[in-house]
Image 1 (tube, helix red, strand yellow):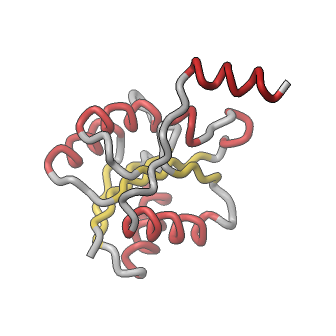
Image 2 (cartoon, rainbow, N blue to C red):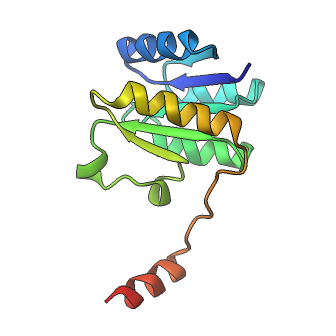
Length: 140
């Protein structure tokens, strides 16, 4: 049974996502901030980490950076209510999946966690700044 870590400073969001994933058969642990999530991950390598973007002291992207320093292959879903306005993507956050908080989130979260938990070779290579500039020039 895959073991999932959910990191969010919003108790309601934590409980809703925890309940959803437990009902789908996952073992779920929660953390109320990035520091607690990082400590939990260091103690137990979870199959997937689901983290909110906006949290005090350590945001979701900073948490992803710290998690990848511990384990470059960690599978991460980043959630935010501000995906489009902030321009959050898999490439610029380090997450495997970036999801907008919306009415579609439960379905998308369930699908993403299942895919990540079952397929360890899903991670796309991160595009370097040099390659990104080259790609941008080729599009013009």
